[in-house]
Structure formats: structure tokens, C-alpha cells
Length: 270
Image (cartoon, rainbow, N blue to C red):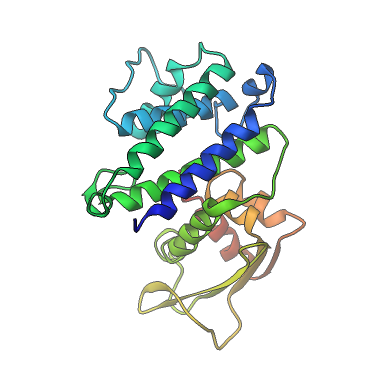
């Protein structure tokens, strides 16, 4: 199967969530995560709910006003499923998550390559099914780190999810620089990421468009050096622009105003 690697990535990520939480007491599930308003149990409930919705299960009914942190229709769907399971214990939700994940993996393994190529709904709009499921890896892997951060248990088994996250962010950087920052013609940017997925990313604005470039012949307007872990956390909105720029492991050279605008615009994964 052409997309077996996506199934393996989901399997590994979901199994890591289960393995991380299984030994913990019930109190651990109430720990707040970096997701506004959500505990560890709520993050699990979201993952369960999204899988159920993807299979066609109706969204639970909601009465009253939405919490302030719910900003859009997709957020309302997520919150409706989270609310459904708030009366359950953490271990009950974890057991439901394990069962739901197993069912989803079995269904994915039964799909043909043609099924994976079909275009349909996704949180990003109409996309091929393989892109949708790749986004499921991204979302699940980031939430795995949310859980680890809430439990104060960072881990080094980054897995394939990290590669998807970092590659997605890298691919969106021209959009950040050109459309969100609106950097002027001729601006050059160099981003140096350190860690397991270390890389140097070069961006330039040419002909009114921000693009990735292979080399630059002059000093960049600003150069940002930071660990991969801080970079993706900012892109996912888990830390602020100031936290990224002022971290001891971050170094910024050149135009500080432009660098700040870039860091503020970098939050692109909702």
C-alpha cells in the first residue's frame, strides 16, 4: 500500500499516547494542557471525537454559549465531543481512545490506494484523503506533546509525527513571510533549526512573492536560530512569539522588528 507509512505513523503516535497515560493516576487526567480550556482528558476526548465524526457519527448537541476559547465552527465540533466525555473518568476515556484508535487503524488498512487518492472534506478544505490522514498524524502528534508537557514528562521518541509537523511548517513559511508579514521586495530571511531534524531554511521576496531559495548572496535581513522543538511549538501556538525569541536557546540577528513580526505571524497550526 502506497500510504502504509501514514497508518504506521498514526499507530505509533496513538500507541505512545496510550503508553504515556496508562500508568498514571486519575488526577493526572485533570492536568491542564497548553490547549486553552482543555485538560489531558479533554485532549483525549477531542481525539476520540474527531475519529468518530470522521466515520459519520453526528456531533453531540450543545446548549448555551460556547467557551471563549472556541473560535470557529470546527472548534465548536471539537468542543461538543469534549463536553460529551467530561463526566467520564480519565481511564474510561483512555480505554475508549484505545478502542477507537484500533477501529480506525483497521478501517484505514482496508482502504485501497484509489480511496487514499480521493478528494474530500478535511480541516484544511477539500484535500486528497492521504493529506487528510497526514493531518491526523500532525494533530495527534502535537497533542501527544501537549499531554507530555502537561505531565512534565518530555520524551525523546519524536517519531514520524515530528517530521510531518516540521515539514508542514517549513512548507508554509513563504506564506508566513509574504502573506502574513507582507515583507517588502528584496527581503531575505535565514532560519537555522537545531535538533534531530536540523536544517537551514532560506526565504526571499522576489517579484512580489515570498519563496524558498537555495542560496542567498547577501546578508539576510534577519537570521533566526532556534531548536526545532521551540519552532514547531510557536507554529502550533503553544508558546508566544516572545517566548520563542527570548528563549536562551534562540539567537536573533539583524532586523529585530521584522523578526518579531515573523514570530508573531508564525502561529499557523490551529
